[in-house]
Length: 431
Image (cartoon, rainbow, N blue to C red; front, side, top):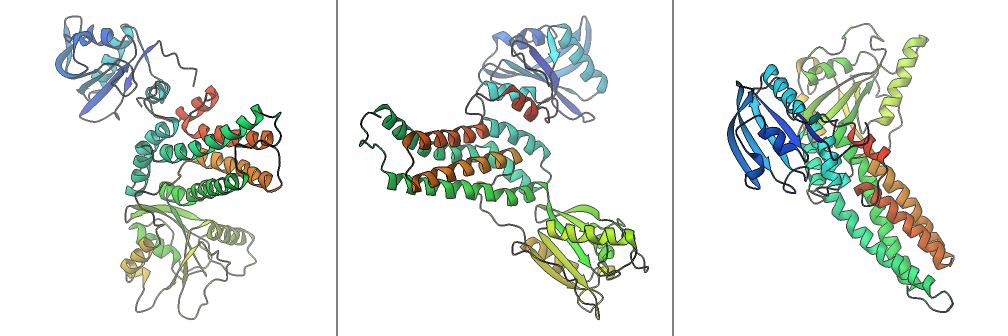
């Protein structure tokens, strides 16, 4: 993605192709004149926000009957003069309107360019801009709620409060440096500073730890189905998915590699992984599958540990933060082949969904998590420095580093163009 030129007027289809209607978005200094040249609406003389019926024409030929929405800067998504043209969804019509707009001074928008302009024009911070992409990509209720919370400024508000505390401390320490000739002068009480630093450290640590939950809710909770060969693991996966996704056979060792698919339960996506049966074997390829099974179980948040009468449960290590659901297949209470016990199992899976309230701030973005980890490490250095009585200049430097790192999340400081390009290049065209 190249460096954006905000002098350009950009246009793009803002809706997925193939629908009954399509919306073309135009933004930039020439947005009004470009659209006005195609239809009878004089966009430059309309109200701040207004909707108009119009004909799009190519010379004397009517291309389409449309609705034209006009947004005068700064009261638009991008903060610029913007127009949205609601056309019929014909591939020919949409391409023709875009072609005419380009002829009248627009250029095609790059992926994410509308949202990047919204960020650069102060309509949203960087974390909110990233939430737009998450909202578009949300596939379940949980990921949608998390994206909406971030879009409404949940993380931004949380970080703003932390930065206010840090700025107060930094200002007091830097004031001491201005009066460095008076060695006995302290504007910041070290005991109070330590307590506040520890409180902020705990808060940042809590936010960073929420990423495990946020990532699972956003991308799907990993569930590993493990057990000995032929206890019904693949049958269970097929029954949960409602389709023949995995091969079912009486021959031991049929599943040689992990098979993965997803279902939605309770508004949350679960990523089920059917693994190779765990047993002692001399088959080198099957052994590789078994090793992958154990690795999948170690990565999973939920383990469906499966057996049948007369066969022991697999002997694998389980972490304290993992939920284990034990299933004895081919019994009166549970038969994966016939769907007996599946409803109860689904309820157990829903009960294992990480709990959080609507007021909780949950981190879902890997970039944010990385920044919080680095901010936490810098703050620990501040706490250690306070413990051994280091000077104000060293404390101030580390506190400033924490502030700068937290600002990376929201874009509160000058953000490198490379970072912006990387973030917005993953957006779809038209957003």
